Image 1 (cartoon, each protein chain N blue to C red):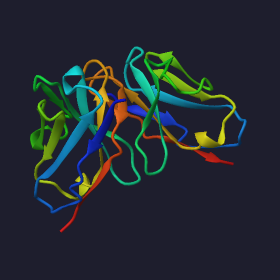
Image 2 (cartoon, rainbow over the protein chains, first blue to last red):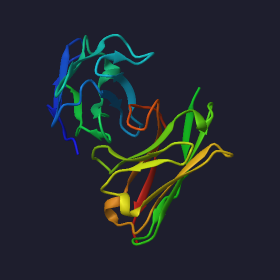
Image 3 (cartoon, one colour):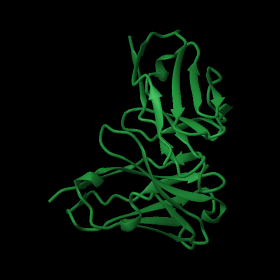
Image 4 (spheres, rainbow over the protein chains, first blue to last red):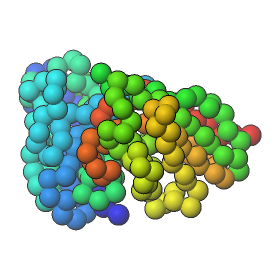
Length: 106
Length: 119
């Protein structure tokens, strides 16, 4: 199976900061990558699909990039509502998720 | 809009069978692929498997020997059965939709239901 490795595991940031989360695949997944946001006690919420396509209704401060084995999620001008855990998911083959990155308040 | 809602089995005893049903509203269940994902408390997400309205399924290889996913198009529901459960199967179970194709991004998700395996 394809292993997904996210870094960092935890990220401390302030409102207004720009933050970047990296996701690496153990083999080439082309652009078959999604990003989700999850808040405590809630289901994951789709942010980005096909590596860089913004899901309808998701604020434009979220952006994704990458292809092959290395991907990034960038949140520009972090807002209070953005403090959450973020997961990447590959769907080149049967889906696997990264271990998550918690974005916390500095 | 599309909504998914999991049933609430709650507590399951070790070695017994975990059964869950997801009710889909706002769209015909024949329109997409339908997926189960789980999340152990405090841990990450694990893809369990999917089903298409034809009954075609694909399962996570690590669960395949214990897993069955079925669909009832007349009720707009799909279901999961996991046999011989252990404490390692304790998790929040989510049902969700794969937009086009079983291997795809997932949206929307049900609210999740906590299943605890304990005697």
